[in-house]
Structure formats: structure tokens, C-alpha cells
Length: 516
Image (cartoon, rainbow, N blue to C red; front, side, top):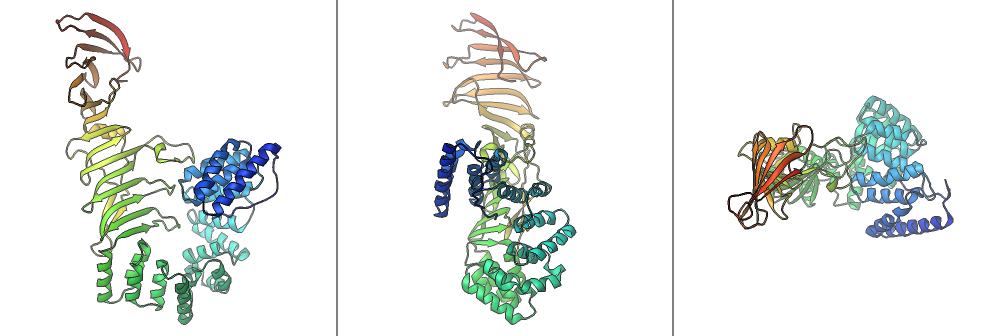
């Protein structure tokens, strides 16, 4: 987390009145946030966006609080980039904004871009921590070299030391031993070092003492259990009881505890507890400190799965289960490429498909943008996850690396028909029947089942449409379509027999855009 930096320096002075108003908003938001009234802080800063073009402070603080709230990273970047572009600082600094920008870009795995951002930032513990995190995913040898330099400058910086222990400690035992000498100051900053360093201590009694100290402070934190079990600070039965006493478990911790069980009895007890588990299992798939997936269980049975591949705070898919098989989902779809480094702010900014499976992975229907695609039985397969046995018979979903997001073309090709809102009648559904993605007939019915319109197609082009314009049960109007290959419009003429005598009393040539 990047620490807010408060300065009295004024980069570019505002008008006195604007300065006073902005300062009031800033103080209001800071005070509300410090008192844990975060909604009030956000509301104040959102109202203060009228001053975003003359003050960087309001936009930066809005971005920072949204980041603390774990909102979508798109919603953080929009005001953050506004703050940097405005470049008028009073309370905060461009350096703080750049550091936050780099942290977000690392989170969403834009590592090269993050390094370019850090070129604008002076050397500090913050910038070095972000730099080694980015390099770790580009060139690990280079990362280790830079990490050694950073630790030489900041041997008591807990973020750098923790990163070293979690990623590189086994490769550099001499550095490990030197960093352990700073353990008292490290523990003051981050008590989790009490169990993080335990595998690297030669004195096991000291390791037990450190872990017991941590357990006394944080008895319900399951992250320390593998280390505690490994050094003998607790027995296997205690590890199992404490592990399943919490309702949110880390998948890695689950695996590590099970791997340390040495008797058939405790392994059996572990499996019994796992198969009865009610709660959430989280997974940090790439081990970068950000959780990508959440899997919910009830009495050991799969309930739902949420997955965020690029870690931007918006799920790629949300899947809901019945009898431990996927039944319905909300999935991202193939869309036009976003602008460089642009991210959606809200779900409403994305193209999402709502899926119902007949029997996974065979789709019963899909809905995108108010259009419902119903495929022929067994003709459409979409398989965003695979189900694996995780520790014995316990089912656990994993992202399918071969999953191809759906798009409207794919859905149309497999659709038997499409349901969509009528463009002619209010609150009426149009049903378009297709063969290999090509429409051959479309019908529109009202709520009572009365047929209001029927269109006949030839080679995917409308030929005629009969319409009941006055909703009396008789389709008195016929539209004739003449495709114009030079434009997006369909030229047509209309005939109407209003008195049902078999003669068309009315004819009109029109230009109609219903099927462009």
C-alpha cells in the first residue's frame, strides 16, 4: 500500500476561493475516512469532481480511497490519471500518484508500463518495492540483482524483506541470515515475520517460540498453520481443528497442511472436515499477493465460483452450481480491443453474456444485450472451467486455459432462434428463426399470444413482412423488401388492405431500417 504523503507545497496556485473550497472537501473526506465513514468520504470527493480540472488533490484522494475500498481498478485509474493530467498539487504530490499508478499496473500485470511510470519517481523504499515486483515477472535474475541492492539500502523495509523471503530466500542463504538479524524491527512493522522466517531458522526451539508468540496475538489467522505444524508448535489434530474453524480458507494453506499430515487417522479427519466445509476457498493462482478466484461451498458442495483473470476487480465470470455442476453464469464476451491500458470501470461498461446450461457444458440459452439466443440441443458448448478432484474426492473448479469467450457471431451460428425486443411494438418480443446463423423467418407476438408480425427471409434477407398494425388479429399490411446493396438500408414498399375486401387501398414507398 502506498502511503499518503501530505505536503504544504503548492505546485500551481488556485484561485483563493477554489483553494478554500477544495481544502474543505479534502479535510471532510480525510476525516470521514479516518473515522471509517468511507461512503461519506467517497460521496464528498465525487461531489468535489467539479474541481478536478483545477486541483489534482480531489481526484488523487478519490482514487486512493477507491483503491483502499478494493473497487474496480478502472474506477481508480480514471480519477488518478485525471489528477496526473491536471498537475496542480497542494496537499498531495505527483510522486504519490505515480506510485499508486505503478502499483495498479503491476496488479493488472502491465509490468513494462509500470516500470516506465517508475522512471518518473525518485528512488525510495516505495519505488524499489514496486520495481522488484514488476521485474520479478519479467526477468528474475535481474529482479534478484535489484532486490539485493534495495535490501542493502533498506534492510528493515518489511515489504522488501517479505518479498525476498517469499520469492528468493532459498537462493541466497547468506542474505537470509543477515536479514534475520533485523527480525525485532521487522516484527514490529509486520508480526507475520514471526512465522515467515521460521523455516529458515536453524534453532527449532526459537522457531517454535516465535510461532507461539504469533499465535498468542493472532489465534484465528490460518496462514501460520503450515509453519506451526512444520516446526512442531502444534500437533496435526490441532492444525485441522483450527484450519476449519474459519470460513475463508486459502487454497495453498489447505494443500500445505494436508501435505504435512503423517497419519491415516488425521488425513481421514481432514477429509471429513473438508467434505463438510461451508465457506469460501480463495486462490492466488500466480502467487503475486492478489486473489484471482473465490469458490463458495455449502456442506462441501460447490455453490459458486468467481474468477478475475487480470485482477482488475471485475470478474471474467461468475458461475453458479446445482448438484455440483455449473448451471448458470455471467461471462465476459469477445469485444473490440480496449484503448491501451484502459480498463472497464463498472460491469455495465462490459459486454456480458448470461448463460444457462442444460447439462454442463451444453448451453440451454444465452443472453447478450437484451437478445436471447436459444441453440439447437447439443449444438453449443461453452466450458469456462474444468472440475478437478482437489485432495481426494473434493471437487474444485479451475479456469479452463482453452476457453474461448462467446460472441454474437458464435451464438448466432448455433442458434435455433433469437428472442429480442421488437423495434416496432412496445413490450413485444420478436422471435427470429435461423439456420446456420442465417434468418429465415421472424415472428412477433403480444402477451396473449396474438401474432402481430411475420417476416419471411431469403438467403438471410427479408422478402416480405405481414403486419397487424391495429392489433385486431388480422395482418392487413404487407411490406415488400428490395435489398439495396449500396447502403445499409433496405428499400421497400408497403401495401395495406384496411377493410378486408382483398384489395389494397394504400401503397407507399418507404425506406426502412429494421433489418440493417
